[in-house]
Length: 126
View: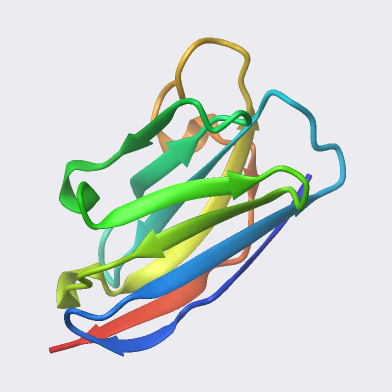
């Protein structure tokens, strides 16, 4: 599975951005996809995840109510709509995926994700 993320950029606080991540290769119905982010000097952290069907999602507390994850399986693409952005959201955002057949989205731990895209930088200025 190869992942290609796009949509990063610079925005002022309170603004919005939408990230996209397209999966190619061996995509199938148990391919769960997620977003992580890593700010300078900090560890990579979980942001959100979504199952293939879109029926289950999970969000980190710090983005609940502001970020929304969705997917278009016809395009094998997952989206991250980010609203009400804050300076502390500044980070490199990474798309990730793993095969997962159980209920829900499983562990938010980064090592449980087998596939990673190159990051896209999001900069939020105050």
